Image (cartoon, rainbow, N blue to C red; front, side):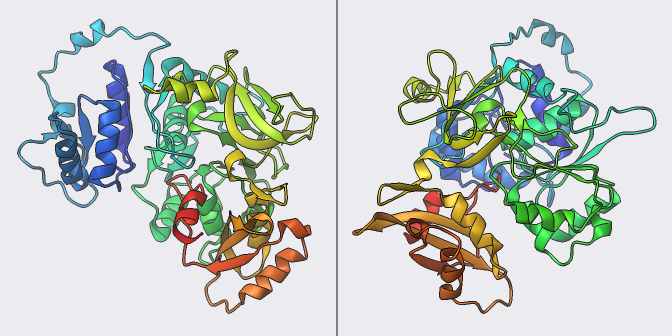
Length: 463
């Protein structure tokens, strides 16, 4: 339970080498949130930093557990309670018997990582990712046609900036484990702060940046971000949620024209990468093509496979698909078919070239007069409005139409636009059944650590 740091990598890799499973926790979680994960994962050891030790101790009391706590170096203080083990003491110890590691027996099917799903469609579930899942997904990213890094030599080394949290599978697997496995230098930031983020981009000459939509919005719309801040970048990848083309062009217009900007698609349950694009791609809308040894299929509500450009639910099959949900065979059975297809719950289409476009989530579609309305489509249009910074759309009950779209909008600083202006803007661009019924202005939108909009929270709090 800690923010990004060099110690995070040491703790993860050391734990795996010792033959244990690793489950990760958001460092801003409360004791109640942590204690639920303790009960589900049943750990033998906790690792944190001084700033999270009190929460870990309170969580242990709630869970009625008594296990050791190791503390890595903090980013604000290094004061440790007497009953906490210092990570540095272990790392620098000269009396450790490393022969015990010879007795560690691990197989490809053993669980390596146990991240918890974001809970956007229900309570968080432990996702069992095996050694095979993680290694396969790292190797899949090394395909000559799809790799986003250059080989490390005596004269060149790519550098990536790890601001995406390591407790999330995107940051842990793609940014940390994969990049280390191919010799890319990983620079960590404990949290996103605009000035330190931009300073690090520039001073560390970051060449690969793995991002989520909020970071792209910042780079594109913040006037403080200049061309010289982005000068060293060769590749930007963006995942976790679909990103409108407008936001991509705002970044491209600030930097050199040969910058590769590539959307990715993946899930916690797929370790995570499913699709990506080659560096020379200019297809900014697509989430890419399947990585090697991965199959994609689109089905309709009758579970019949659909053809090119037809929209339905996306299914994935490949070596990166999870073993299952921890101690939850019923939930596992609902998402993994008997022949190994994982039901993503995402609405998508695949064109003739195999390029994937994500439209929305199955459970988040709004039913208006029998028509299906994708919130992401309306959100994309809202963000194109010159006064709109960010937007989220959910369905609300309507006596006349069954459901109706309701929008939550964050306007740009200094904007004095009215709700009716934005409603008219959207209405001019969509069919009548897709028109937004109401707009609510908010200072910010609820999102998970990877930047995915939490429409469930919008519904619970405001709809």
